[in-house]
Image (cartoon, helix red, strand yellow):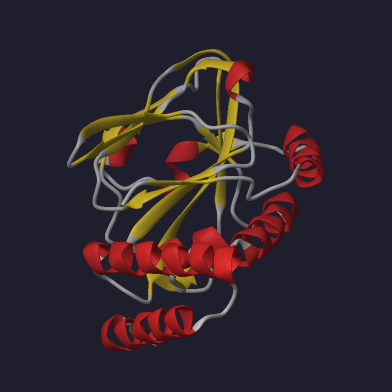
Length: 227
């Protein structure tokens, strides 16, 4: 499932994040690249343990976990602490690559199986040229360039790339998630059912039908989820 999650960060949060990023000291993006990715990666990244990165991580994680659509789609069990990158000038692309199946946080040993990948856009589309996130899925290539504050959520099993940024600066956060429901098809069924229940309750309130559907949702979650 490839899903756009709108308005994860509001305008006030975006302004604060952009101020912090403007004061940040960037390093070579290959600090977190695997051996294959390092051959096609040319961007900048915020050091994971920098105070600015940790402040940004708190804002992003708090907002993600409060976002009903994101939580319903991802059913997160673990989230690798969000990372932050910059594409500008000569550091401007990330070629086709596959995400590692397991991500280990170097300083803590915290390990996350990458079921889902997510990119949070921190620059507006008109602030840079190029820079589309291109994801290869069962329906072909999907080219993604979202408003600042929006997230794209997609399976980590997908081959993907960031097209060269030929003008301006592209700022983003990216992360990997281990879901309580490992199977992508099962997660999609649960998400579709949950969204339908939310719409039904909003339209009709709590009825016998919505209660029965909610019961079915949780019974499926019990069958498929790992705690």
